[in-house]
Image (tube, rainbow, N blue to C red; front, side, top):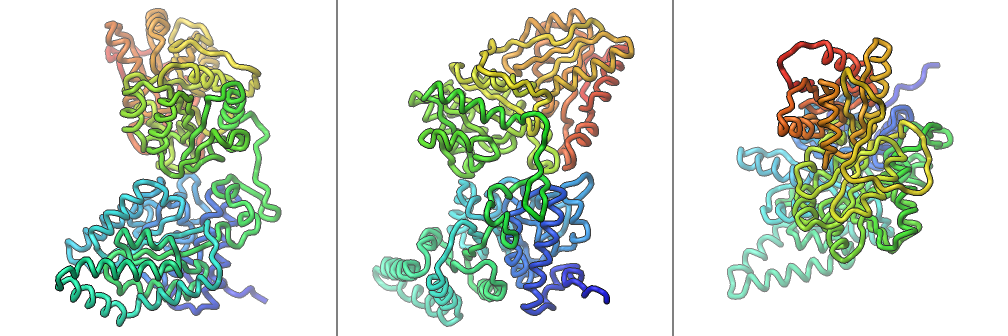
Length: 637
């Protein structure tokens, strides 16, 4: 007997959803969860957040007509159900793989993705822009922004809400709240009041009353007072959260069950008929439908592969990770110095600060998705005599450019930046590769920048930063240290001093960060071909070890500079500037990330594709040695 055909097999576009009844929709939700769990268990990705929005995605696509109506998913790490429902179910198994679909929302991937995302808190501002563009060209389509309660902690989201309330254009914001639990009686009251407020008669009477009052002497003040009383009574009974949004100029509806498809459909259908900005508050369960993700949604937020049957997450049995090395080091240093405090922006687990938070709860600050605030807050802590360490991923720290420059560097405050996920990060793709930090930090006056090549060096450079009288960044990549030298204690490193790891005279590779080990591999390959190549671990991007680099250039006669950062404005640019200032003319090749956005895929394949693998480096050095070019400076492209 053949298996019954899955309902998901019948869904090739959102239009197909409209043919299903409610029991079929419930079955569809289960099938979507099954596909997400099966795929993410193999490819890794964001699990808990996606399992929590399955019914929400179904309801949105049942009511709104994508791609004519625009649905924007903030961050995009909860967009897997959306992707499955919008024609990508057959490619979903390629999620985050080389040549496969992206783990976030991308305009160039589907017409159903009206705005690309990867960083949090952008959806409301973008949706407001799309809505105003619609108004100016006379369009009628709905614009919906879906944002989580975590992303709502970001300042950009609040700025977008404020502006949307002021502009009063038609816009629907769906607040996906997966941190709140609501009692049944409160939910029922909220639903009753929401239905009342959506009723056409209520809308007409409210609008007419406001108009009449405002035409009377003192009428505008009376209208505002009456409106305030109405909001106060409504939200005292329904949700205190709503008062905030009402004050910003939104019509607030909710909170409602974000797993009740019929209820959400009714809410969305009625919301389309209300003028002005609307916020619909839905409550969901992160990890819904998979017991291990429900019970530990933090662990199952962004994960590698796992075993479905027991929820065991794949662990590497290799070297210590850079993040773990940082975690161990900051705890040890904090034990020695009570002035050390740690700040992160909603990433205590990802940045390795969870143990610090457990050990020193009064000295740990998670400021939410507010990187700009994190940096200025740290500046204030430093001005108050403490030693703050700001641990933020490279790609997210770039949101704090002005705060680093204006609030930290200009005042030369001793803030340490622990920059995790620097360089190529692999499957998360272009929104997450940390390949611009050297460029956006290097030109800041007073900033010191170091990049450890392994976990042992990370410990020492972090200790150095915490004794340095000024701002210092220590940047390191995702994943394991190339070698697992687990050292005890700390050795401070002289600021701006590199080291020769391998002597040579035919050419030199000057590398920074873990690319040092790639340089050593390349040197071994070249040695087998009869070339004697020097390898230097620069350690510091700013200040450079001028004497070491200049002597190396004179000794070897040609130099390849290696970094996992944009070749524009990065470490190699600093080396070129130094050589040019001393009028030293030798062949130099800069090897790093080219002037383009790097797609998602495995880190090995991506590095090989852009010329950062050892064999590629060896070939480039050999070409440099054998070349009789009169061109002195060349950028890999």
